[in-house]
Each structure stands twice: as C-alpha cells, then as structure tokens.
Length: 213
Length: 213
DNA sequence: ACCTGAACACCGTTCAAGT
DNA sequence: ACCTGAACACCGTTCAAGT
Image 1 (cartoon, rainbow over the protein chains, first blue to last red):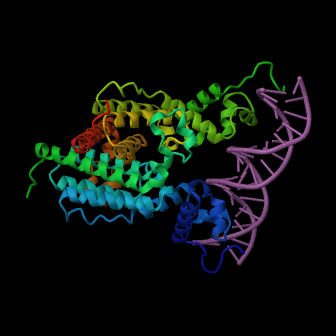
Image 2 (cartoon, rainbow over the protein chains, first blue to last red):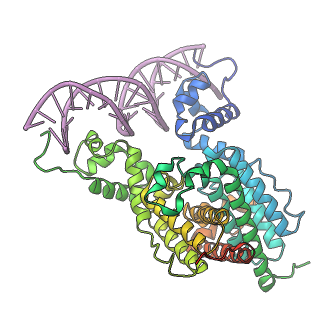
C-alpha cells in the first residue's frame, strides 16, 4: 500500500502502545516488531517517527515523568515540598515499575526530567541552601526514590519456605515477606523519607544563607 | 573436535570472562556468542555449564555480592555496623556498575545475597529491634544503597551547556556536574547514610526490646 | 512524507552427532 | 560428559521502491 492517505502512525500512538506493552509484558517484551504488530504496521515504519528504539523508550519515560506534580515547590516550605514531591515521584514510578530500570540513568536530554530537576534544585536554592548542598540533597533524594521504585524489597524474597530453612537462620519468615509487600515497602519508604528530611533539617541552620530580597 | 580430553570450560572461567565483558563493554554487550568467542568455544557449549544466560548473570552477580564484608555484624554496635556495611556494599557495586541494574531485583535465590540479608536482619534483631522494624530498616538501606549504586547522579546530566541555557533557569551550571562526579555522588551518599542512621537511632529507644539473655 | 519488503548482522536456545 | 554445526524463531536497523 505504501504511503496511506492519512498517516496511520504518530509519536503519540507509538508512545501509548509501547507503554502498554511494557506495563503488561515487561521491558524485554518491547521489540520494534512486537510494537509494530500491535500498531498493525511493519517494524521499519516506526523509523519514520523515531530514529531508534532508544528514542521511543526516552519518550515513554519522559511521558511518565511529565505527570509528576511539581506545584508544591515555591508554594510549600522546602521540607513539606520535598516530602509531597517524593510521594508524587514515587507514585509515578510505581504506576509503571517496568520502565524504572530504564529511567534511573538520569534525566539525560528528556525535558520533563530536566524540568523536574530544575524545580527541585531551584526550590532548595531559593530556600537559602547553598548550591553545593542543594545538589547533594537532590542527589540523595534521587538515590532513595529510584532505589525504592526500582523494585519491591519484599518481592525480592522467593515465597518458598524451604529456601531459607537450613542456611539462613534469621530469615525463617522471609518467605512471607511477599504477603506483606505494601506494608514492608511503604513502611520502609516512609521511614527513609522522614529520616532524610529530618537529616536535612538538622543541617539547615548551620549552612542557610539569607535570601537576597 | 567434539569432547576434549580435559574440559576447556568451567563455571569459574565463564563467570570471570562474563564479568570482564560486562565491566568493559556494558551489560548489553554480553551475549552468549560474544562470551563464547572470548572463551574460544561455540555458544552452545555454555549450556553444558549453565541452563540459561540468566543463570550466568545470577552467578556473576552473586560473586560480586560474595565479596562484601559482613564481619562488622555481631562485632560492632548496630549503628556502626550498618554504616561500615553500607560502605562495603556500595564499594562492591561501584566496582561493577554495569551489573547493578541486574542485581537490584532482590536476592532471589542467590546464596551470597541471601547470606547478606540474613546478616543484616539478624544483627538488627539481636540488637533488640522488633522484627517489623528490622525488616523496614533493611529495606530502607537496600533502597538507598541500590539507588546510589545504580548510576551516578552527576553523570546523569549531559555536559552540554546549551542544553540548560534557555529552559531550565536553575540548572545553568548542571553541565559541570560531571566534572564533580565523586564529590557530588559521594557527598550525597554520606549525607543520606548519616541521615538514615540518625533517623533509625532516634526511633530506637521507643521500640527496643531487651535481649533475652 | 510515510509505509512496505527484502536484506544484513545479530540474538538465545535446542538437538542430533561426534568422541 | 562435553563440545560442535546446523537450525529455529527471534532481534534492531537500513534502504530502495512504492504512492
């Protein structure tokens, strides 16, 4: 048929379909041929809209980051803003866990990821944090949030009692961790987040600069 | 030639060669054919020693975890033990950053990873932490350490000044982050680690149980 | 401009055949 | 028991050919 009267593909359609495949079948299931089949098209057609498969993944990732609320920065005090942003960020990741391994390599050139970094860093500097500390706090938060989104801690332990019996004397109940997934993972996230914010707050008085205005 | 007089392959040799390829060329560069070529053998020969490529990766990952010192548990007080273990764990990851994306899916059935989880959890319980809290602390530490090992924060920002100029007003110096890689990443790790340990310590008096003896 | 078919250089894995 | 060659069903990407 060659070129159709109206384009059958669009970046939007490709991104949405790719996201669905990754969410339902996992990151490795996304191949250009599989994606093309779902879109009722041949694989090379995708290259009219994206230069590489990598670019498709970038676009999928950025669409997810674009959904993270940033309005708390410049509205709430920095510790509260950091807290509610962390929850929003983690929720966005949690909605698409299979994409996270791809996202954690940094913002790269993805606009939404850069906007997010800009908002966090800007809010901290505006609050009086010296640039060196603002950078460090941003990095610490990224480490913790990415790590917590990257995979459940609880689900990392196979639900097979026999595995732990003999060799791991303290893990006798680890096979039940997966039953308490959200309690464990959410509890650890809250514990870590509050500890980090408290840690930052205790540092603040010693390094804060009075805002210029 | 068919079967050689003495086996030319061994699990050990396969693991070492695979680790070298991953370290020098990245995780995607490891294919069974590439690995076989390095070992001067045909790809199917690997299947006499490992059932799948996944099993090879498991073995590579576990060898790395097996190098993490755990002797501080049961010797040092729990906050000091947690601190020095975190440094050892992170150092092991940092020596093989390309393997980390594969490791973060939890211990699974890898013996060294399970031994590590057993040591951390056991030390916390022995120190009087109720099981629920010991689990949470272990998970929080895994989130943070995995996140910090998974990829540099500093290197996530392309060293291209033009990228930030117009659209990201607070990131005007982000293009220089990569020059300060270790300062930024190590500083963020220290800040986060000390904050987390202080957070755990402030919780301790309220929940600790006297050891049985 | 946008889609297709054919092709290239790859994958992981199976399996019969060799010693 | 342990290695090989051939094969199967896949990959990402290029490119000339079609409209």
